[in-house]
Image 1: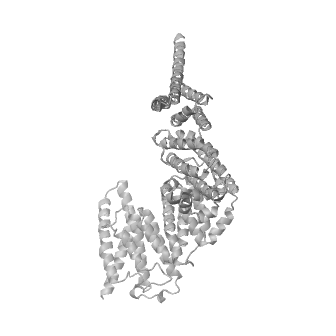
Image 2: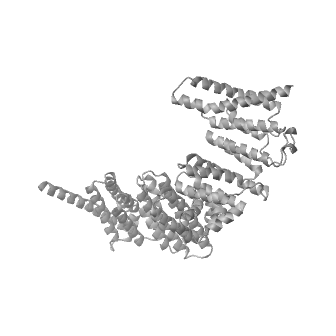
Image 3: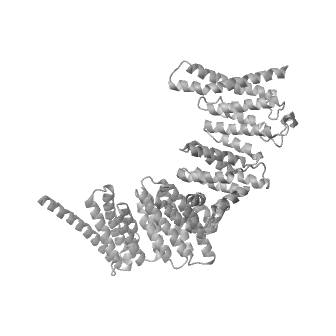
Length: 613
């Protein structure tokens, strides 16, 4: 019993020692500042900060160390009481304001009561110091977060303070916010995407404050008019879209807090004039950033790197939540109809929505809604021919290509078969929406830029189906000239380029035969395509692709087929008497490939004999 009593007295003594140390240091600092001895006062403040750091480190390193937590809280309480004192000289407040916001913010990761106390201390500085000074101090505090292990919790107090600073600024509102927003966004990006130690509760707290800042900027906008209002609203729009992307990537999709924060951001986005249609088809990030930051726009693009993702997500969240769509007063039915009926807008929308599919941090639920929306606006759309200027439609093709790349990644990595199935349907729908004259080049580019054998096989099979469809739709194959490999305007796939496609797989650019069995899917598909072209040209007595010319037959025979036969025969011989699972799987994989390969060889040998007789 006496032992417990002694321990209690020891803890009480330690706590009072902490308070006494804080009191002595703060009083010493005040006296030095009032005496004009700034060198010594700076040294004293450094001692104070070091002491506070030791307390926060001890409390954070062992969450179960109650004495350390009591010590730490006593220190914050003492600082708060001291800053609240009406007799404290302004010079002392100013001196302490440069370092204490950083020091007290480090305590925020211990628990909510420490977070609340840290915010209270910063609020006291806000009351006693000018908003312009505190803007600089709090931005500096945020910048220090890169040195923190608990960065998510650390940035909450300065973010809370900045939301109050913005509404307290009396003049040059836009200029002040313009300086702070890039700093805020860089810190949010680091915490949301690059930090591994932040849990959901910490991230929710961060984004509550981030949305609070958006609401504060909105309040400031209402105080302004003219050019300043326009620029601040544009900056607010960029901020909201970047936050929406970071929020969607870091907080659980199923969390109700996530949906509530998205709702708030969507309402502000609507105030900024960012309609769903404008975000999908006409929102040019570079132009808006140039309007907001002028000649300095390039230096600020990194902090706005996910604005395009946010633009796409604004619409996707409207699909997810009726409440969000209702808050923005948008009619998604009308938007779907407009995009379905307007090819240019549809291509622009595809180019925007690809950002949801390509970014690995976004949850699959959001990607599923994106795929469904894209299927809806591309359903039944067959381009055939674009009626606009060549330069106009060709300018959209790079975006369409990267969109197809993003869809490809969903097909490869989606965890649910239904999502993969819908993604494949979407891939075909987007390809069908591309002008005939561009479709082959797009498919070839997809094959060239794909490492997956299975995906290459899928793309080559699409080429073969396109070629088959062109033959079926041709009025008369015989009307097509077979001299000099002449192409037919209705059959853009039937060109010598298709042989280049086959060669990419059967004789890879780096040399040597393809890697088997790894590339077996792609090789089998390429052989099927080659055999199909051989048979179709031979049956129709045409030679549009040049496949039947003797030089191409000799090349295919000596450079593609015979080396491949040697490779396949060697692998089959090596594995035919081996009964482990890998050997059995290899033989089963190569059996259909070997069958098609020998059919191709027989066909080419027959054609070569005919060409010499």
